[in-house]
Length: 354
Image (cartoon, rainbow, N blue to C red):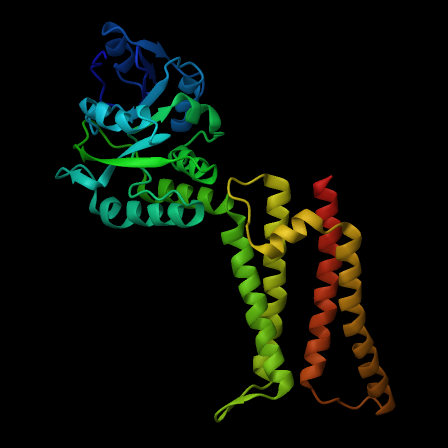
């Protein structure tokens, strides 16, 4: 393999077995230097870290593809170590792990080394089952088949996360090898908080089960439990559940129902990388039609509304005096609002699904 002298800007480098192809989006002399050493250089027609990678991916011809940042942080003499498990068929992707390897002094800010990268990696492993130790290492080897299996379209820094998210969601085998991470030459362009938030936002938006389903269903379950305890007059020792608990349970139930509905909307409209896998969302997306949801909503609304009408009759019969606030009154009002949510959510789901 040809050794390419690299510039000091962070640019994507893709290496095939028989050729070096540099997808360059920098403003330094990287293209000139790469061409002088025999590399094929393609220069993207749009800006963006992810766009530069995707632009080059469309033009590589090798059986295996190596990517890395051309800022002297990665030692490309370590390519054979990462290539070995992919060539042997033990992995579809092999990544160089900085966190399991050695990080040279000054190569990575402590905020990134001890907080940012470990937390982002934990998020990605939890949501997408990637099982890696350093999700944002830029030193990676792909088989051609794995690269063609992936469907990625990010233009920015979140592209690094998207590659692993999509690989994890598709069940591709990812292995890691410890690497040495060197100090960068040139000025760093990474914005810790802005780029970190972009990664987190991208991971959450593409995992509506974690973003919407789990919190929504948990809030509904807790709210329903609190309301049931109040209606049943259950006490825990000297503690009893009163009106304030009933109101809190009602608010949790209604809020949880709306958040859980977002999971269904997001799954139907956005084709997320990791679709919700909980049985409730899966059943609603796969089987529930407009008529089902609207009918359920009308039934819930009808039960609550019937009691509300009865309350009105009693209020008139009492000469419009103040009625006592009872637990059942709050439950009836909750049913009315929940029923309205179900009816209109069903119509909205039907309109966006067509």
